[in-house]
Image 1 (cartoon, one colour):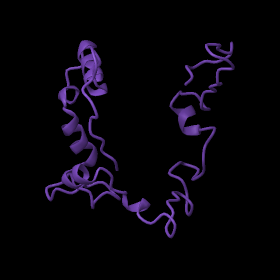
Image 2 (cartoon, rainbow, N blue to C red; image 1 turned 90 degrees about the horizontal axis):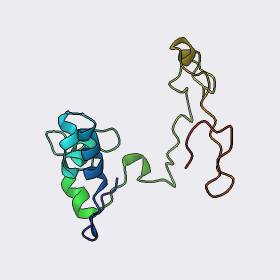
Image 3 (cartoon, helix red, strand yellow; image 1 turned 30 degrees about the horizontal axis):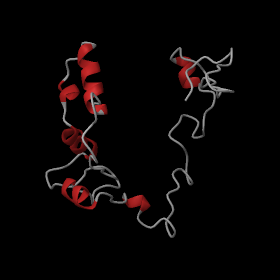
Length: 139
């Protein structure tokens, strides 16, 4: 878990991502309180701080807001000793899918009337070029 402090004041008319998305949501008519949360409130919510001041999230129970502010970086429990205990999710047992395996074709999606396969996204071949058969925006 990492917390970075603002290095400089935003130049000119620059705004933070939090400000931008808050304003965008409000102008789109979203009225929920979460769109007015401060960065500090968002951090506390992401950490899911409990009554004891520690995170209630699995693998993050040792993290407090104060420790994170002071240290800047605190490894989550499954990354504390990566050499001896590497983080390898789903290396044993099954995946949380109906088949217990990676599903590139999903009967569950089909039953819900959704696409059976993930969409194909091709990389741009040159600056600004877009393949004719690309159906989604690319990075």
